Image 1 (cartoon, rainbow, N blue to C red):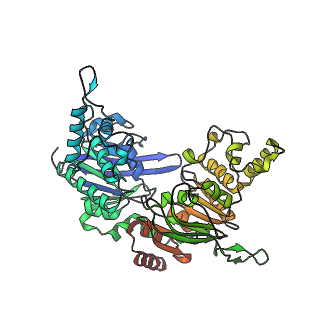
Image 2: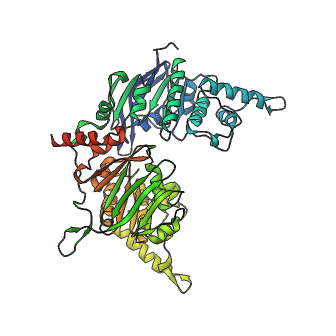
Image 3: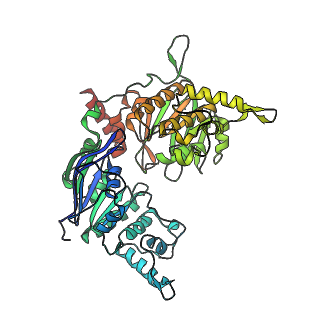
Length: 528
């Protein structure tokens, strides 16, 4: 293909999930020899668009996708690859325990010679050559798990660009590959993209990071709520303008609703809030990404933590619980929690509802009863025997209290909706009577009715416990929290409190930093 010709053309693209229009009427094209960035906040439709191109979801009627002039049939992953679409996702899908050469062979296999023996000398040489073309000098025998994040991304790109059933790559789709990279690693990545663009390859670059987009992209398409807001030359835009396009001016006027006016326990005699001493104190907490994170939370207070992918928000919950090694101190009521001892964190009064229910919380082979009670069975022991009757009585009470629809004591938890499974996990945490409740993405992937129920439960719990919410949903944080920490590149970029906690302010700080000016800008917009 000639540079400037349309390598990918998408028109009228739409995707609808039950009750949700994830993508609507999207028109976009990628030209040979350009980097076309697609940006937008969480829920804007970026991931759905990538899945659509990969043939992983069903498009609505009227969707048309052409690659190098050839029509792409719907839901055809093999055809997508054959026509020349190649994908590298945030997790890279590499095998850390295998060598660079072995990982490069995962998609198309390794060459053999005589008696079906792998020609390792030729394969190692080819692997070294492919990575050299991308600007990386890599030992092809090195284990991928020992490489830097930037070098691993190069391995993933090199694998993606290999010919598939005789078809060369025409468009490379990079989906948030820089999320966990350091600044020098990102610089290497952008250098690689410049090399690829010079070969005439079309690049679709999906990212949250506006600085990268402005450095590397020729054009930028902004999505919001599944709709294309604009497609513009990257050279005519600033970071602040991109942030405005992503957020939308109406968001700046959307103030918090439904959050308790004051943090602190409620005085039952007067109905007023009263402040209490710090129940939860975090000082200089550090992990793989996070550095020197400090904050306090009182009983009766909801603290939010915001941050885009790669900000460090994803590792905070496990650091607080002691599930992974950490530096710094974590105290509950003045007692320091030992690191790497999540069992002691629970004993001291901490409970966690993790983000990934399917992998880290729900046990699908066990009934609702066991999923709810396994964290605390002591109330049901009677002289060395487990009283199933007492257990069933308490589980029934929690099902009623949290309105867990469709649940029965011995019913399969796997038959419940995502929202009702989440309620089971919340009940499991609340049964431990936590002094500090940590909720990581508490409403991710659940329907609107379940979101309202979960929020009501959180507000009730916050009457007597300190609650920490880690969420990618800025509206959720603005609705629930009295304070919000905004993380950026592993550190606290800003701390918002009271009237400053607005969805627009949170999103601006996540996207572009510059705490003072951005908060002031959001405040001035809200007053107008």
